[in-house]
Length: 128
Image (cartoon, rainbow, N blue to C red; front, side, top):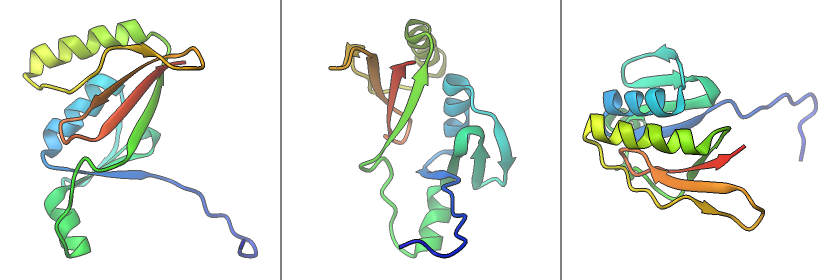
């Protein structure tokens, strides 16, 4: 059903996070996202990603939040090998252990890697 004159567009994807500063650093350093607006407990990045602190989210919905649930962010990267080097260096410098799998080739011939952010949100990075 389409409403007459509808101009609805998906604008953002919101992830609930436990540590805002750690999450901001993660998405800025690894994915080169820039902050558009920083309201403390709610941060809007380029590419439509929004982070919200767990406590704020729980107050809004009135129930316990589960972070890192069944969803995935998908990024494309022109140089997957360079990204993997950056990821390795990030883990060394920040003491953050990010669950990853080895780079693999999917059935249509693109190399991909799966990893998780500090709250366990699943991220797929594929060759462009």
